[in-house]
Amino acid sequence: MADEIFPVTRTDEEWRARLTREQYDVMRRHGTERPGSCALNHEKRRGVFQCAGCDQPLFRSGDKFESGTGWPSFFDPLPGALGSTIDRSYGMVRSEVHCSRCGSHLGHVFPDGPPPTGLRYCINGVALNFIPETESVR
Image 1 (cartoon, rainbow, N blue to C red):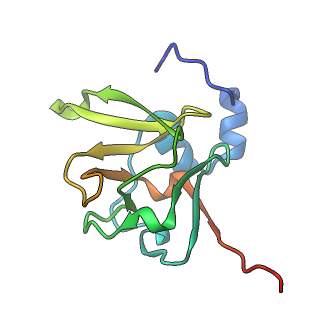
Image 2: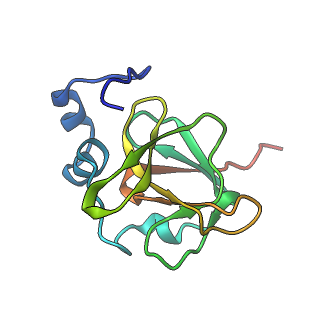
């Protein structure tokens, strides 16, 4: 990913101005938020979860499930929304996922999720913005 060029690019200064300190640590430095610390883990409304770095839609609320891990978990991303790389940190081999539009680190994907995909996208809540579905005007 270090050599990958993304459609949305910003200088380090621009990222720091756009993101909170915690978002910057997670999204630009590959950190991890404390489990259970994000309100989005409990979000139940219909809507879309977007990248906090560039506003790209990443997941539909209907693809979110309670994994018991302390982080928002999804079984399927929106088409083309994510990229992945191998993460060999902490003596493990994991699949890291990032926003395909700006390259921001989001979390990891594991093969222990529910049907139909069997995948669990374990995502840092601070890397997401939730946009609730609006009711149509009648």
